[in-house]
Image 1 (tube, rainbow over the protein chains, first blue to last red):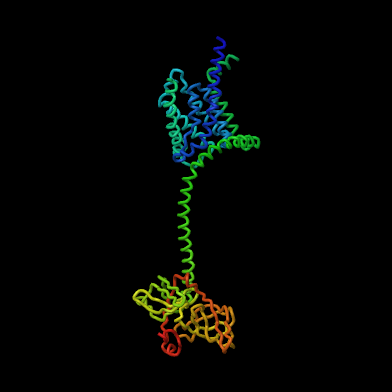
Image 2 (spheres, rainbow over the protein chains, first blue to last red):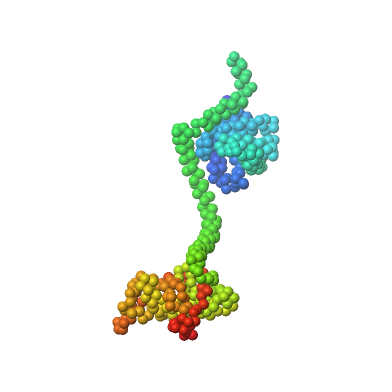
Length: 174
Length: 277
């Protein structure tokens, strides 16, 4: 019984602490090398955010907020962007994504287009906050800023995130 | 008290953590310029960059071929553009000189462009795009900003052919600008020379040669060339003076025809190719 509990806790810990970081590194490499090649009107999808939303829905709001903070910190540190900007935006995104971490609806959110809508929402917030702190041009029209730096990358990320709910159910069902 | 905190924590832990993390993030934002932070970032960035460079190299290798093709095309386009600009530059320089020349001359000048050149060793001629309809007549001098090019020889409605200085049939009365010594200049098939210059005449290498006032064809002083050598003729009392023309006949493109009608009176006295024809 005790050994069973230790085993279960071990698996839980692995998926909560190790996998998010194991996945983070290759995704960040992809994000900084391959993904820019697919830029559409200077907007690129944010793979890190998709991963963050996925884990935030899976493990709750608190987990999502902290994971967002850590992801943001690593992102800022590694990519050389203004330290603190991605920390802020990813923390907020993780917090928002965590709102949808309802145990009864978790599978619905992860296995349907709802996932993309959540990603869209988080991505818009993330992009606007990030661009505001890292490269905000306050002289520009706010609506234009929202569209160019918030909505467009958000939409692109949401479209790419569809891959998650296309792949995810098949894995779970098997 | 503990229960209050415990209850608050239980009820609002997500918000408390959020606010805390946001505060930390904002503080971090203000620490960006600290040398320690910069150092840590440099290490992290450098380490990650070595990993990403491998991926980038792979991507770049794949992109090299298409980029190579694109660059080759751009290169060809730029080469054409540079050539065109160079052409315009040369033309511009030439036209600027001609405009300056036109302003200094009191004689009417008819602008023309050389449409063809026949630069043979003894019979060099040029065809210009002005003819009878423009008032061109045989005997009119063709010049550019460097000096005399030749004399119009035959004229059609819209085109004219001029003999250049490098034509054995063209002989002109010229003079040394410095010493005012006159002589007959001609093309011997190899060099532009002034023949029968007395050994006692003061002609030195480097002297500028211009058309003489005695000439019925070109009565105004127009530069022709510069003395480069005095060929000593062993026997007799005359020297041959070798000239280097100012005009580059190969490169010349835009010219003027001077509307000067030859003087009948002088023409009767002077030996030139019109008298020979």
